[in-house]
Length: 253
Length: 255
Image 1 (cartoon, rainbow over the protein chains, first blue to last red):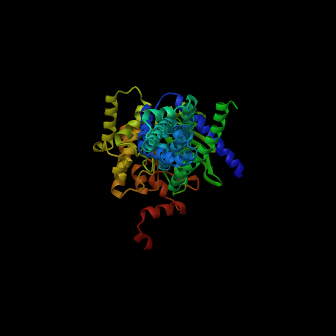
Image 2 (image 1 turned 180 degrees about the vertical axis):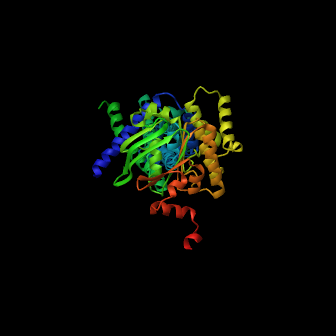
Image 3 (image 1 turned 90 degrees about the horizontal axis):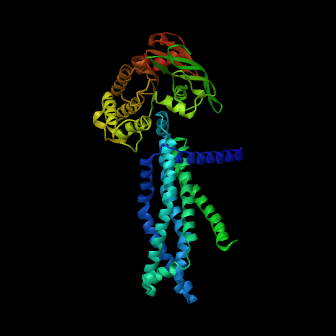
């Protein structure tokens, strides 16, 4: 019984995703709501991303210095930080923050709209609640998370630079020349690609749980909670898969 | 389906798990009438109205609305039909992230895309005036009273000029004075917009004031129908009890 329910759930999620792709590409488009969601996801998350990005750069640099100094390799700090931030930390930390901040918000908002019959009200007034509520939110998280991840990588590098400059008196130019020596376009594309995957995951988990909420206010809390837990879990799984695949492409198997 | 019926239900059955809520319901709603469906909580009234609006699917039976068999409609045809049906929710269901103006504009701009912004403004002003709440244009739902929310909910459906109005417990949770105002509004809507209405309620004052014809739902089946007096002129204990607990005061009951 439980196994059949699990597969039924997977099927429902699959249908939800298929419907998203149908609604997002077919007119009419909800331009106003899409812009609103870009603002909600992007601008409203800027302060926390700025703070955590900068701190991540500073702390990670401080923690790495002692190990590298033992081998007389403190000059590798800019490269190490660039590799760490662009290949792993920036997309992952951004996604986890957005999952906690935006994913839970989407789950709770759609959940409460569901239990207060607002979604039914959209449906009976011959409008398309899926297009208005779901497609716009998933699109926003998918597009905005890569932008925020890029922004976090930049801020992390700025934090790292300040720390390196303070300790090793490295100039701005030589720090960034050294940092980008080991970074290729593949790394930047991978950062954007996997951040988009994480954003899509956060959007789908939040919207699916919120849109299918039942059992009143208890269900709303559960939807918000499940949205965060599921998206964080999936982000780590995706990270693991993408790292394996990217290593394959980077080193040619 | 009878000639002047706008809604026709035949052999409607609906279950949730092992609980059978509707056990073969037949009903016709005629052009221009206000039909009240009475019944205790849990008798299946809201399920019935949600089936008519297409929010739930029946397990068995047919639903014919404005000459169309809803079981055979594709999504586009359903959307077209829904512009002709208004639904007033028990909870009002106003979009709480939007002000009153945006709530009213929401269905209008998505269903009548040819309208200019001037025409939209005029339509919004008219429905707000019709429900007597012109001053609330830029208020948020959280700033409105229960009665005002009901009125705005009704205005939001009227803006599409529906031919059928479905009211789910229109007076639930309202004080007696506001309830009377809502009852008067339902009658005004019928007259001004020439609608046929289905009113789901367990409030007998609402039923008496708004209903041209009443049907009583009990345990998933209609057990009485007719005018208010005809429905309650019976010794059926299910009907008697319902009447007594609505209209007879505690004092009279103890006497």
